[in-house]
Length: 376
Image 1 (cartoon, rainbow, N blue to C red):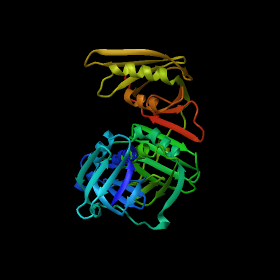
Image 2 (tube, rainbow, N blue to C red):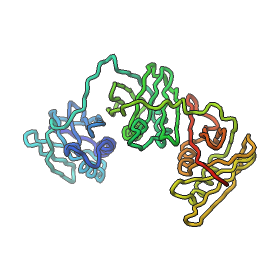
Image 3 (cartoon, rainbow, N blue to C red):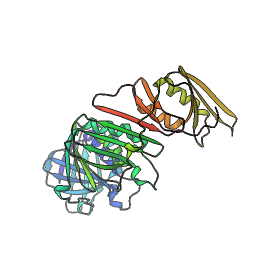
Image 4 (cartoon, rainbow, N blue to C red):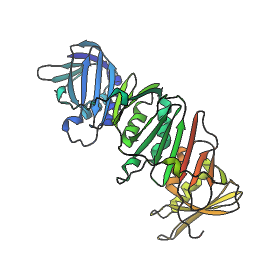
């Protein structure tokens, strides 16, 4: 077997595919890439048994066909330091010795038998399969807006992922950890099918990083897994089992008091005041008045305190409410409009955070539970 490929092109693909490989694997062969040569296409596969990512790389001067496994870390590190030029892989089919050559160097090592690499292919009934094609932008925005709200409690595994609530006219992405909730609806394209699944954190991160430069993605959803396919990559991942909580039921429908505030000014103030919070709970107290909001934090353990005032527009009279500074920073860091609208009812009920204006074909809503405030 033999083929030639530009080193930087190959590096871009192997570095993307390597994102699936765990730092520690139950099977040592999963520390390797599976290289498969067929015609003038080299297929690179990486897997952790739950997720499998495949890249297709065009090659030249191809001779023979077959598959072999190479150490992923070694290949990535080598290609990262290699100058941008064509390199030749020469594989001995008998003993699987691999020679990588270019005009000023040669690297040799022994590969593993490609037939030993595990496959997670699972056949599903076509009637249980949902298929649709959508712009990559639609998926990336859904992941970007919800990823920070994914839970990490092993006792609530259904919340350790992003819910995809797929309707014929739009996709709604939802994530919650019981303290905060994000609901993002995007109608950039109409899937034309109806279904739902919970995408775990790792696959969501892989999709965000690997498919960012692709134009469109074909999505195939089966009972236990999903496949995302573009001209360059194919990614198969398992779902989280179970039912996601009814997110619509927890979103307040009657929050009569509206606070409008400059996003950057408020975010900077929370970051500064947040330096002085008690790290045990991160509480920042807020006193809301019609024209300004006062932020206050203190840590009695170290006798520190801070307060700031930020102009705002509040439709109520006066309210004292508490929120976690780290959660507020995440929410205001994710929202992108210059002004943010916060809808409130009373200090014990969740606040609804909205952009002042939604992007075309999308709706974004964030929910944050308040913290108990005894005095200001």
